[in-house]
Picture (cartoon, rainbow over the protein chains, first blue to last red):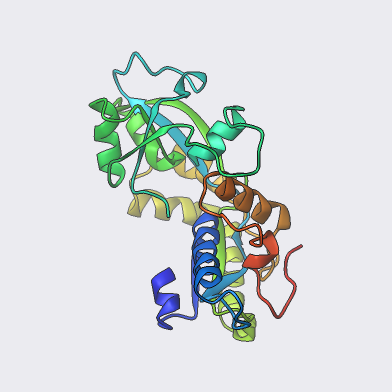
Amino acid sequence: MIEAFAANEIDVGIGLTEAWVAGMARDHARHMKDKPDSKEPWQTFHVDGTYVESPLRWGISTGADRADVTNVKGLKGMKVGISRMGR
Amino acid sequence: MSTVLADQQFWLKPSSKQQPPPFEPVVCGPFADLRTAVNRSKADFFMWEHFTTKKYWDNGSLKRIGDIATPWNGWHVAVRGAEADPRLNYTLYPALARGIKYFRDEKNEAVDWICDNMEYSREDAEAWYKEVIFPNALGSSNEKGIKAAVDSLRKAGIIQSNEFQPSSVMSVSEKRLV
């Protein structure tokens, strides 16, 4: 959706809050780097308003037989699986 | 979210700036790959939406460690460009408002639909339904929530510029951060 905004393909999108904020931060950083003195708007998109007020609840999981991973406190310094690297 | 988890556990240094990663990230791929990874010890834990994960806790293929909620509102409407789009007020927003009212009024139909079309138990669908809160008025955002997202992303190193603030995510033409 972020690419579609930049390509003028869509006018509106609904998505996770942190994804929008991270995407806008990339737009902002790119603008600061390439055109720091420009008065042009740097936003290819922006946040209009809340769609779902309740937070998203994330479960924290390990493997079924992982005796070495038992509680949240014990997660410190461990390896976290992620889908892909955040940008 | 792993930054948020570490932050809530006080494992980050007291600073608003970018932190060394609290956990070693292991890129695995989508949900199925994450499940495989923790079962094969390629990764030690992962985080995924609670109800989608619960099926795997219930069937014994994953072990539940805990839960964490985003310190911010879950979903937002985004609009192209930098200026507010007044068309939303007579197109998308009235339609969403009708849908939200229907969802609130017709709980049984909503739960039935989820059970029939998605693989959730009635019990889980009802528990999920109770937790979902839509705003009463569309077209504005909550400053505390946006600030929490900005702060977390800054600590995770995604936001580097001090000039990027909560107000930066909103429209330049109308003030809608309440």
